[in-house]
Image 1 (cartoon, rainbow, N blue to C red):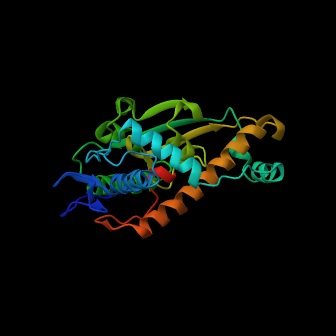
Image 2: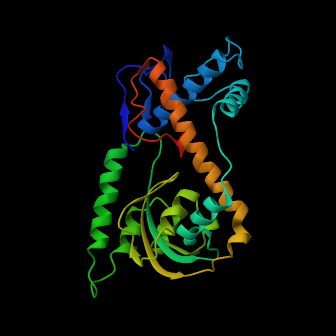
Length: 260
């Protein structure tokens, strides 16, 4: 996630997305652009007053938020998943529905804070990731002292130890990476979360149990509906962007948090 000073103010149909000279990471800029596209579409659809004031700080009025929700309800087609589709998804992703998984974890957190140079922060995190992954059996532990030296998490004082974690103990984006596989050791890539960049080592795992399909049928259907919603929203945003004058932001460079 790159942070840069955009030399000119990014705009959607002439509406500024940030104050002149404001530091914005590209994901935040894309999210503001998508929100502004939807706000303007709600006005055009008669769901929001034309004098609704746009903001340069990324916020929206309560009226705009409600109008965007109403707009999406009318514009997005989200089909109800069939029982067959739900069962196929369940069979293809058994680990997702297993409960009780635990992992004993330690980490080094490189916190993303206002004004930080994210590119340099990532370089430091990747350098540490390479260092600890190159640790050889029999060599002195590098992880704990580096956590004490570099981590922005209080756990650094304990060598980065977080103890035994379950999915529900973690931020969702952290849990997705932590429980995506079964590997023991330092995960092969940085873990991105709302707190920053993590170098993560799994010291041990305990597997939970996978319920019967019928026990999680509703949750599987909800997940498939969410996938359909995300796909429909992405297509709708692409349509709006194609009809708008978008300056200073590349909407096709990556997903915005709106469609994750």
